[in-house]
Length: 212
Image: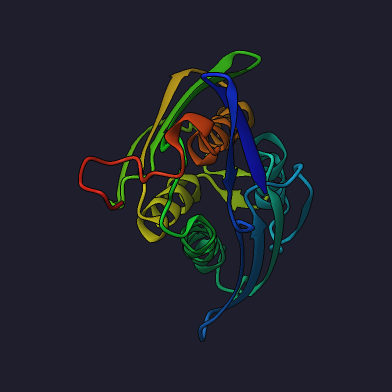
């Protein structure tokens, strides 16, 4: 990928390598294959065995302009916990791999996304310091085949394994489907902003420490 910017009458050309990752994670509980392209167009091929979770990951790819493939074989005969948590771990690891040393990225991202009566905010820092602040309430136990408590578990696993700081806050909402979907879409838009290449950064690492 090449980024060009006009500076003081001349053209600055910044070259970067493809920001992609391929990952295969196998445990006694799950078998997960992930491919990720940060500079994609929102194409998704998702099969986790949990329909609503597939819907959320597809929204994450679409609104984050990520090309994303996720194939999961999990122990769904037990419940969905291992499948959802381990997918978060694998996807977070893929994000870290695709970002490399994070040269030239904007680093910070923020989005406030509505879905009918629901409104969720996501704030992302590609900090290298894993942290999740999650504040959303679901008044029923399941959305389709997904246990609602696993929404937070996914975001926690993703934030910890990608080593990002992530704040997710429900500002308004009654419908559990709408709240969850607004949260995933907000993360997608915040991530899209944070991982975007900043032509003004001239390939520098966006930290006074010189490392993220």
